[in-house]
Figure 1 (tube, rainbow, N blue to C red):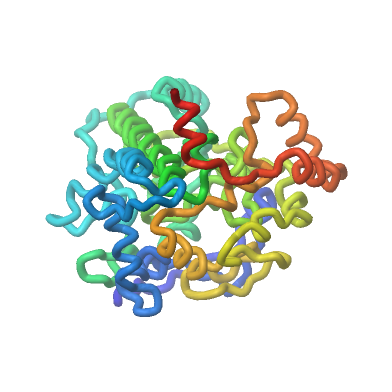
Figure 2 (figure 1 turned 60 degrees about the vertical axis):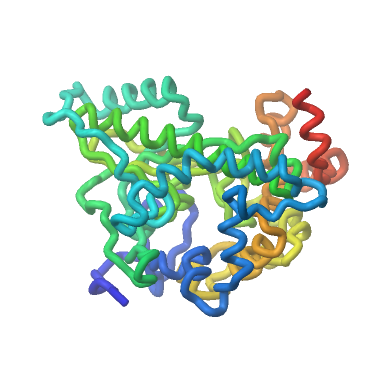
Amino acid sequence: MLHPPRKKMKSKRPIDAKTGFDVSEDFERFDQRNEIYCRSEWDPEIKSEKAAEFFRGHYMPHARARKADGFSQRDYALRNATWHVTNVLRDVRRESDDRKEGFFDTFTSHAEGWPEPYAFDSAEAATRNLRRAAKSIGASLLGICEYDERWVYRTRYSEQTQKDKPVDIPEDLPYVIVIGEPMDFDLTETVPSALSGSATGLGYTNDTVILLTITQYIRNLGYRAVASMNDSALAIPLAVQAGLGEVGRHSLLITREYGPRLRLGKIFTDMPLVIDEPIRFGVKEFCDICQRCSAACPPKAIPHKAPSRVPHSVSNLKGVLKWTTNAEKCFRFWVGQNSDCSICIRVCPYNRDFRKWYNRLWRRLAGTRLRKLMLLIDKTFQPRERASAPQWWAKQR
């Protein structure tokens, strides 16, 4: 396996005081090969015919449609359709160049940009310009942080050789733009089901289209920009540093706008930008007393205990004090039901429609000493039970 020489790297950074990240001296950058989906291709502990069937099931001839609620042909038909655009772009260079773009590799579906950088009056002007353009393109959330190599993979995974390969993100790109696209609230209510996987697929498709469009815009301005989705770097730490939200007990990003119902993308760039400040609105303190996601998780993959530095396996980040999900238990449940699971998102008290004033009021009070009362109110008035697929289909008529 390819392992680059270890550079002397400070594990702690000034930004950690703002994000609340507690990074110890034994911190190690992550090798993508150890990510649970990669391990399903090479690790005998995870690799199985059922796992292969799970991935094949995202194509209709192989979908395991059955009579169970949420797993019918029409449920899989919608789920697999929502993934189609992302899958097409993912596979553009998969066979020819060993690039699974958006998942194992950065995107290369770009046109040539302008040869000289556009001369903005200031970084502030460039940032305002970026935000205006991104809003017109359809970006729901956008934050900016400095490049932090701690969260960039030490090595990437090669699907063809099943070994490590170098990360292809230039280290001299000083900024990371993090975008967030929400997943459909009503579809998420049908978790777990193939139908609910449509929320994930749509999230990825919207993320991919908006990510590539913003990246091409930056390149057209004459700056360098590299579009990255699930590949090459850990999105959640960068999103926290970019001011999009905080990390919850279920290890997911929780935002003010959409709670945990979000897909993330990243753009590494040298466009002059002003970085955002991390935000704190009481998520850590609320999750300290809330057990809704850990209690609802069928495979018991989400911890009930306090944050820890002890990883469950090589699929977890080492050297960071945090709540860590058991990736093996989570993935095996996905494989068993033949569709992804987002029960932890469905039952999370922050999974609300924050366009409504009373949900915004709940969010504000949940970040105060009234958090126990807000948790009780959520349990009493928000049972968060699974909605049936027929109920969802009936709403569309």
